[in-house]
Length: 403
Image (cartoon, rainbow, N blue to C red; front, side, top):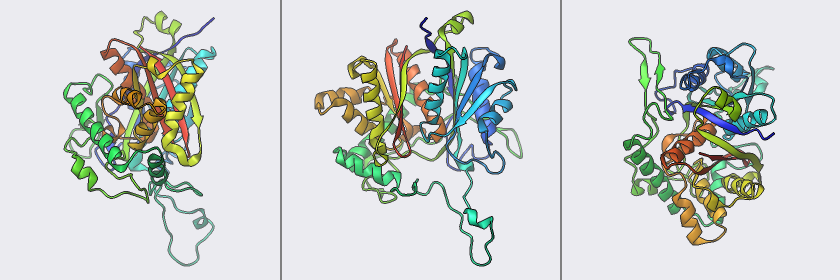
């Protein structure tokens, strides 16, 4: 018997800037508040959840939260002690991989209800001291290393350098990347003014305790820059040896959490829950390590072929803006050298702005692009959406949903 898998609730916190409004919120609290909210919105108790998969990319908050972050967050959220949880690191794809694992478990009949969660406190990620300090440093200085400095994996160039090179190989110039970044900021600002990012939709409010006075209540994303201009973007210098990528056409380093409640359709109907979306198909895809910027396009192409669908069957596309290069290259791959088709695809891609404006708390972004697409499909009366995201060393994740 075919088991349809559906999404019944989804929510995210506002995304804070690096060192910004949420820098003092522990990771366990950040993830737990998203879990409590995603259940509360459909009036369900925690014991309905049978499995939890948490995406988290960074070595977080040592020694406060040294490992099994998913387990810690589940307990902090008040979920049953008997709940199975798994913490996974698939770089920026992590929470969308978590959603795929939920889909698999339900599809196979191993459970009826599962939570996909992403949480990242990038402001609270510690510096790294080399292992040889443990075994004794008799003389000399000890150097601490910053994980964020260029995102360089041993043996490879910085992610921004490779992505800039690959963008140029696909014909996407620095000017085009700046134009896309400007588009992202302007579309987000328009969506914000139209109420698409109001609390109670994909966003929830977050309270951050303070030493004195009442908690600080966060109700909006902190990253957007509505005053962005093309002239200002053009004046920025490239970073980490990249020929094209700058702080303006890249997202921020952010804090945030996201949660998606996934069920079998039969369970949702039994509980009389409104279905937000059906998961049509999902998969992972990996390419050449230097081609991270192209992997979302290849991943989408791969899943469309696997499902005997074409890009014309898709009403909305969301490609996480790890850099502006990613959606530009992805749409070019999907267009297959057809310039008219390219414009059609770009018109339905990232229609409310994406990570350049919203922010990119890496472990939380996969579920974020999923819920953003679901809600926009509802506004348009339904249809199919496809979301894709890349991760370090060219891992990709993609999902097709139907509303």
